[in-house]
Image (cartoon, rainbow, N blue to C red):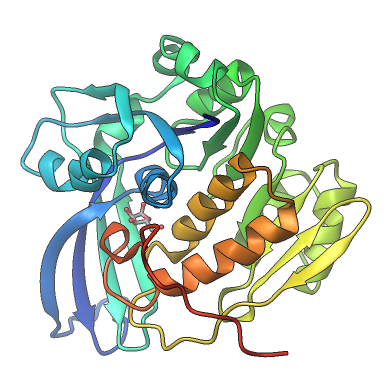
Length: 302
Ligand code: RIB
């Protein structure tokens, strides 16, 4: 069975809800305080595994009380965790504020994720080398990112979120590079290129910079798939967002699940948009993800 290896972060998400996001220096009354499983790497791995993909993970978790909630869905979804180290440190922590319109702000303390550097990744390179697809984000050290690309023998998919400074040649191995509009601008700046223009112009500029393919995620407006040969708008189901935390990660995991099945970029993105929309309709990241038996929302607009 084809295999996806995710090299990435594991976090516990501490989530509070507020009517709106506070201004600098302001204190607001809110509610919540749940501690749920998160981390962009773990989110993407769990999204893929729950949709039936064969997934292995390379990463690190701490030994504190946050480790158990952070790993809950990594265990329950059947991911191969043999390349995950439990270290004598703190688990990655994300402090998340969700506003009434479902938008979030996130501050991360990396904890054990900071251990996932080049020596750590190289020591686990066999888990990467035998994968058909390797999926990376920006929540591990840049040296670990490069080591993972170097070890990969299959297709490399990169969702550089958050955008960190990484090795240019390693980044250009991404096929596709997956980014939202804001991230696409920052990546263009990292490449020394202009970050102004429409989202589609940014995608075309990234393709011209050397990426074999680019998937630009556009939230409620769907996505855009650009290659040197073709450009395609991807529609998304219209939903009422409850919490968008981790919806982009659900998109990435679902996208790779379809790539493993042999889908085209456009078909994979079309499916991923429905999964991302599903994830935005309930709270949290991993708790909001569908399984193979979930009913995904349909695209209704023409
Ligand atoms: O993309 C959402 C994720 O970002 C959260 O789960 C949080 O842990 C941060 O990594």
